[in-house]
Length: 96
Image (cartoon, rainbow, N blue to C red; front, side, top):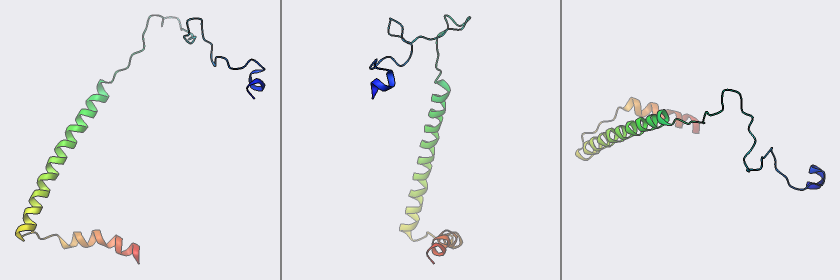
């Protein structure tokens, strides 16, 4: 099947490859000497901010859970029954 596709030449290079083994790249005038550059600083800064925010949120959540556990253990926890009903209602309506 390869012979049919390549006309009996077998496997060969897919693109133009020069003798050094590097692909041929057409260089535009004025761009000779410019190197490719990748800047990750903004992405890394955003990732760092996200991690800091997550850590803050996790610590706040842990504090809130500790306070709720203490209220449950002491018997002073009183949930908002309207919020409980509103969150349970979609599940009840889905099953019926």
